[in-house]
Image (tube, rainbow, N blue to C red):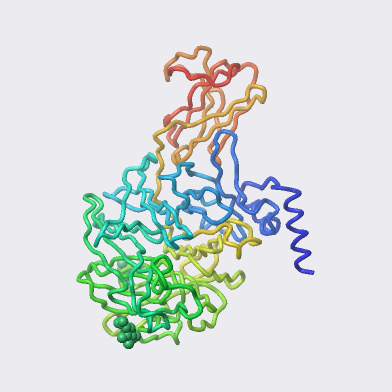
Length: 532
Ligand SMILES: *[C@@H]1O[C@H](CO)[C@@H](O)[C@H](O)[C@H]1NC(C)=O
Ligand SMILES: *[C@@H]1O[C@H](CO)[C@@H](O)[C@H](O)[C@H]1NC(C)=O
């Protein structure tokens, strides 16, 4: 019964293709059911006239004015996402910026966020390949400035003759303009403690700290030298892992690196359910969670029973946050709840006690993400953003834990398929985009409409359609024909017969200053590459 119903639903989806989707967030609330059943496609996106770019169409199941500020940062990926790329959306889901660049032929991008370098916000992300043959990310970390030009490509540093490549999980810039990055590499290991061969292999978890200005390696740490294989929560027996360099046992699985004000490193390891603190000299200072947990749990076990967790961040004041996947059935210890959660802990690292300060989950729509995910204390008020990783969805909470906005990047129908996932998702108020290129227009004379967009520009308050009877004129003598407040990625103007032959669209900021104008188009000949 259920499967024939599902088959019918899929058939209807295929027949109808994609319905037009309401654009504004408030309309999206009403389309929630159709969206979730795939009626707008399995990977719903918004397409434009003036650009070949497309942005994900979000579905808001809950909406509150308290999350109306800031930008979403995603890099959707998965088996159905043919071109994974970083995407900025505004708080209502309108596309702000994305790119069709391949960044060195990368098939995958992750960990897109805004980070300061030399005091200036930069776009940063990982791009590379996360192939089935090697089971880990091999790529580079890209840094773009506010004009959207690549200003740096950061690579892992080769050590011990090992050709190390940057992995998907982390690229974190410290206040000292150093970068912390994760790396995976096969390493011979004695696996007898977990039932494997004594001459087996692990997939080692490495992190490096490099000086961003010089590229010099400042610190390197390898899990295989500090954490025993027996700490793993991933079952070895019955799997085909560990027998060869290309199938090393991924016993630790590092997925985040942070640094506290004393210079200690705080890392998260998914497969051992551990947060490990490492001194600048490389000593293990403490371990929270997992088999070698050193902390007394002051919250009835709920501070230390996180499993398969991601994105551990240190916030000063002995506060640690993470995304607790809380997945039960893959060899870890039993966790009582049926949902992933954003978790904030208070640690006393002298007395070695841990207590839950907050945990964030949506009781009405509990989600249990088996992999990936992030938990961010945003720079927007005290809101918290939880990204469910394998499930392409984010929830924005008030600090107290009330659900403000519940947002989906792809229909619920495909959540368990991995077709569209979101390794991490962030929100920021700190981005100003000033593209080096001009706004673009599209004009088909027979339509009598001109479309305009300017990928990545965040300071445009209004669009001004301007005209002239002569193509060679300077900026000063364009005649304003029409004006529109910017609302969304693209705008359009209807043309009338009395308008001049040459047209352009100017982008104007909130003070009325011209930012940049599109190229001039001849409304009879369409686009002309004119000297202006
Ligand atoms: C492998 O480790 C086991 C203990 O887990 C030990 O008894 C054995 O001697 C080790 N083998 C080698 C070759 O080091
Ligand atoms: C640390 O806690 C104190 C007391 O609660 C608070 O005043 C201060 O702002 C906190 N500092 C940070 C960095 O959170």
